[in-house]
Image (cartoon, rainbow, N blue to C red; front, top):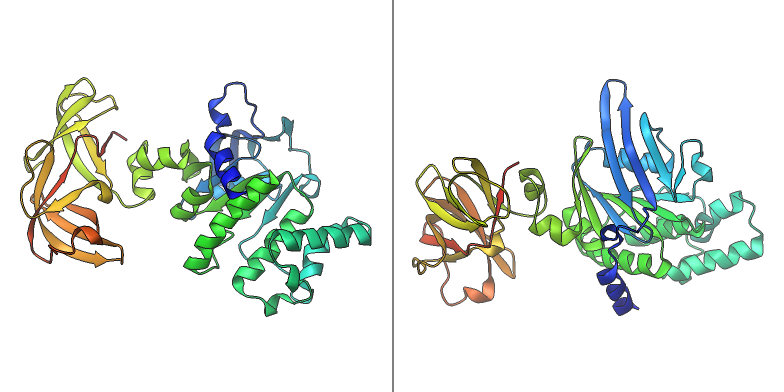
Amino acid sequence: MHDKANSFRNQFQPWNDPAAKPFIEFRNVTKRYGDVVAVENLDLAIYEREFFALLGPSGCGKTTLMRMLAGFETVSDGDVLLAGESLAQVPPYRRPVNMMFQSYALFPHMSVAKNIGFGLKQEGMPQGELDDRVAEMLSLVKMQDFGHRKPDQLSGGQRQRVALARSLAKQPRVLLLDEPLGALDRKLREETQFELVDLQERLGITFMIVTHDQEEAMTVADRIAVMDKGKLVQTAPPVEIYERPNSRYVAGFLGDINQMEMRVTGVKAAAATLENAHGDTLQVECSTSVSKGQDVTFAIRPQKMIISRNKPKPNGNALAGEIWDIAYLGDVTYYKVKLASGDFAKVAVLNREIENNPLTWEDRVWVSFDKAAGLVLTS
């Protein structure tokens, strides 16, 4: 099943199909709280069966956006549509949407089975059908033997599974996940991320997740919308967001990246010559439109740089520096290098590559990379 899910995800790109119709639409949506604008004139299209992530720091508007879809917040201006129909006059309990909260909000006095079936009972589902649905949900989240337990008899990961089962019991067309894994330890969170992906593919339900965890968003999502101050900054698949961020903000928000202030001293076809205040020059590929004399940022990931004691052959870019700090992380070591320009560059090296020639503090080194390794950012 996992292989089929991966195959589906590889081919699933409705946002690139002009004929595909969005399942969820935010049209010119603004949300105000008095004089504070939480979401500003935002447009967003999400497709059926998509696992979509809203990513950004606290206060950027991502949870507000999700709550407007759920109906827990009203829209100040604009409209939210589901399957082409406006949700403006549809109360939360009538929307085919369910929300799983970070706190899980389980009823402590009820068993796991009763927690899962609570919403179904409120809707008047016959007991036999309700019992079957609860059993189905318990099986779905691999909790078949825990139906009789109370929430305080469960681990954090098990409570998370119960909350997920309860959210899915009413068979919503959209499941909203508000920081759902924030209470789990790192290892369990990583395992659960892959389980969520498999579960979403199996059910064929549209998932929207709100998170500030970049690794979580990149693991689970088909597309990510990076938000800042109530606006969408970039919306794209994880690979594109990571490899081709459209701004300094997005580049800095997703993963480690070195950003160096440079000036364009030459432009030729899809390449540019950059120079910093110290006089170091770089020859880089550049798909962004730039002009001579323009101030830009050169951004490059630590794992795309090479560190060495000897100056590399003159067929790439090389900057001299001194090792300022070292962080050993098991399989990878990060070197923080103070360059001659005064800038700092972080370089990631697999430990198996340095076993026979370890580097240490204050070593004089060269940091090198090829022309296509980085990005030229203008905004």
